[in-house]
Image 1 (cartoon, one colour):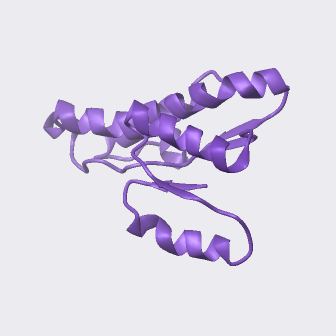
Image 2 (cartoon, helix red, strand yellow):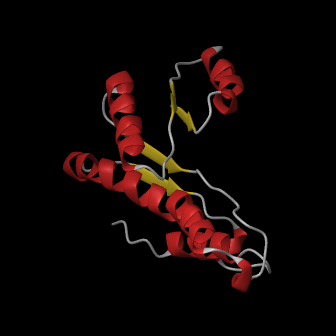
Length: 135
């Protein structure tokens, strides 16, 4: 399953997968709870149980010093990079626990451990993922 905020972002990947396998795509924004529900419901409808979740969505956000970042810019990065993986994980964990198997892979990158100047929201959101307790 491929998900992105815009259809054009998933068309090429979807075509490549269709050439040798089965894929579906859903246009969704992981910062929105209803979109996360649509992602999970579409995956279940197409494939049955969810065995693997890859939290890979992310936005870089503003590239400026902390004092110049607006609260809305901060919130947008947190909503996609930190809240999105939380929402998707929350929606699939119960079935994984009940089945006794499953995997959640969350992509964080080097910024989670070695923040770089002028990108505090990105680094903070990725660092937050490293301590998100998913048993």
